[in-house]
Length: 248
Image (cartoon, rainbow, N blue to C red; front, top):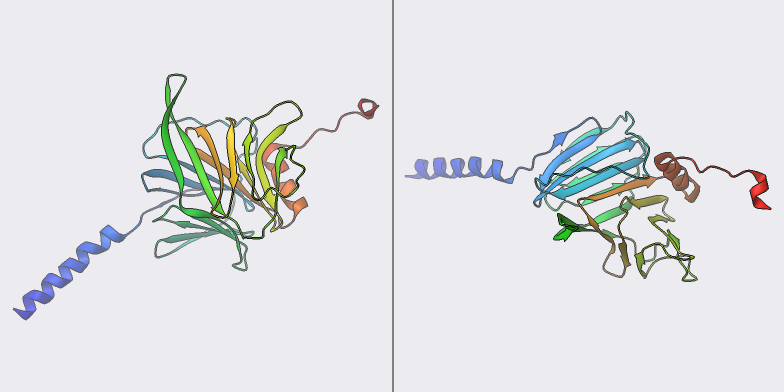
């Protein structure tokens, strides 16, 4: 009877292991996985630039950027897994993907946290746009409590630091909106979406929310303000300088 109990216990343990395991597929640029009813892809565009794509499971869409001209360059990186977390490391930064909650986190090579998504921080709400089934996509991040961020375009709010703000990013007279911010910690986030976007920052989270088929953003690590701008120019192209006579 005792021997039978041991065999049953061992079989039970064997059956549990595959259920608890989390799967992912390594690609030339990063990894693909399916979790939380989402298809997720994390790609190195360069050792310093990472693209994160998330969409509802099985949803077919075609995303063509209107501003990103850079193509993924060959990037050497290592991949290791410990528990539910897959760590990808280039020679510039580390990207951790939690295969249980979907959270993507970014660290420098010394292991210092730069930015993290919120656990279960990606949501899709079904909607219809011009007789087409689509979603409202929302992506939430967690910033340090006293971490200043700058950007979002030309916001007429007499502020440089955009913490504690809620802005509808929609272009208007004297107001140019760009779904991009950068931190004094030396990184930037570009939410690659052209619909009217709600940017929210409060004590609970920092988020972008837009009409979209997918959540699509780029993380850029430059180490400084100038470094982030250089990464953004690498991603979207150089800014042309107008001839001297245009300045009067």
